[in-house]
Amino acid sequence: MERRRATLHRWDEMPKERLSDGLERRFITGERVMLAHIHLKKGARVPAHAHENEQISYILEGALRFRLGEDGEIVDVRAGEVLCIPPNLPHAAEALEDTLDVDIFSPPRQDWIDRTDDYLRRK
Image (cartoon, rainbow, N blue to C red):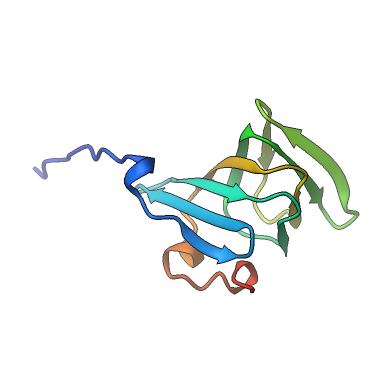
């Protein structure tokens, strides 16, 4: 029988990956779930996209304005609030303030792991 082990991570010891001006992240991947810290400077944008992964966004600090679905419904999510985004729902975000967002994805985002998430990587 395979022996399973827990893994301890410390955010402070992990390097931030700079994706664009004002957008940085760190993430941890388990077998079936991914946890990410997303740091956004006021005005930073995440372009419209969709993915097969279910997403939960928990704002620890600041505020994000999400545009959801084909009709672009606007939802502002502030510190202490959580937005659940179902799989394949188009969405975009803009930081209304300097923001620390915790995102949870299931299953893990393969495009993040492979660094093929070009929509995020702009200068």
